[in-house]
Image (cartoon, rainbow, N blue to C red; front, side):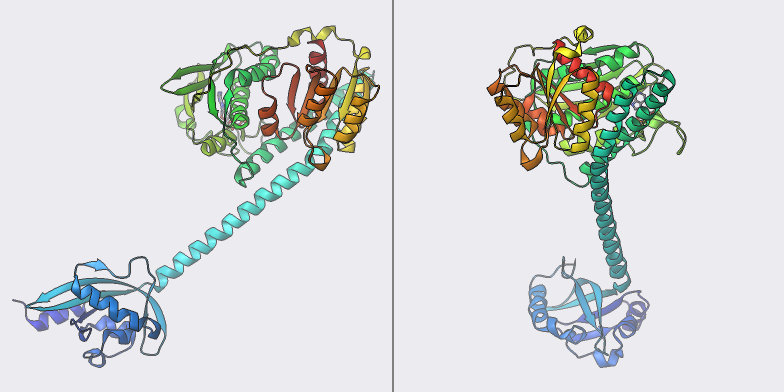
Length: 504
Ligand code: ADP
């Protein structure tokens, strides 16, 4: 048996303040640390109720807690989930952490409490919480700034790009044309960066709301074939896109954006061979893979390529193609859709990016989407065609009109949906409608297209130019007489689309 002197000296040397009370809450023992912590001499405390060490407002409640504890004793921390406070002799309070252990002595129960001053820890925790709150706030403010700035920069940039394209076409002097082409390339690069920043900031600021629905993959794949066909064949690559004949349940616009980024990378990082959009169905899932026969990715880089602004082997400030944002956009969308993107790659052989979507119960229509044959575009002669152009932003409207005029199209413009409807109902005849998506007064380009088809004929051709492909894509999927293109659009793209659709 240890002597009580020895026990006392062991308890005095413990790092925590230790108190022993009896079942009525009277203090039987307090070690040296208690005096240091609470400012009482041990002799002042022995015989006093434990509530002496608590701020006044907790005392009455504590008596109840204490008797509950002595009725069902066990070792446990005190006040789980609560912030506990002690009170010094001078009346000042401090946060504490307390752990309780019962000591049974015959019929009597005593309780040992180890008390720790957690002032510093609380301060650090609070400072961390505050720093985190500030960082989140700053991040949100940055995202909002980026979203607003990118959005407001888009229109003038769009105008600038289209006007450069128009000027180039008006100019016969090869030297001037070359300068204007350079200017267009610069505007294009700026637009692409702006688009990527806008996407990232929209995803980051939570501005993108998931719109889950059952949709036909064939229609989306067909759209991708149209969008990437020329890019691949310009590089001499074969583009193979499956026809999955299946409906999936997800957000079509976001899935489309993931696939666009992956296909654009596959084409960018492949010099020869094939880029494939491959599908496999099984276990209620559609596994989609974008495969290429390109440069491949070294194993130690695979974990890094999804980071923002990360490009393999590219040092900051050096000249480069792209901005290292494509895959971080893919990753953010995947997180939003609760998908996992897998990467398999062999340096020098190629890469495969894949993910799985839940197949939906809705049966696929079975009908092959009608596809316009874009290749006959060359036969078109602009002069014969009349285009109705609907765009609410005056600078962009004017630039588009000039560009289409130069190519010999007969262009009539409208600034609002109402103006467009008046023109459609009037005596003018039109071959094609080119419309912005978001129009003044909350109308949309899709509404204008629907009205035009009601008034003229239900296969009336239209191009929807939009900065927000999400709703647009959903509403108009699989329509062979429609092209959807994202803003900013450059002069070559716009004219190629117009030509191809009129030839279809
Ligand atoms: P960016 O293509 O603009 O550089 P991304 O975020 O899309 O940015 O890609 C990050 C990096 O990952 C790229 O710079 C490239 O080095 C690598 N990468 C992405 N996709 C492929 C691919 N299909 N094949 C080889 N490398 C790739």
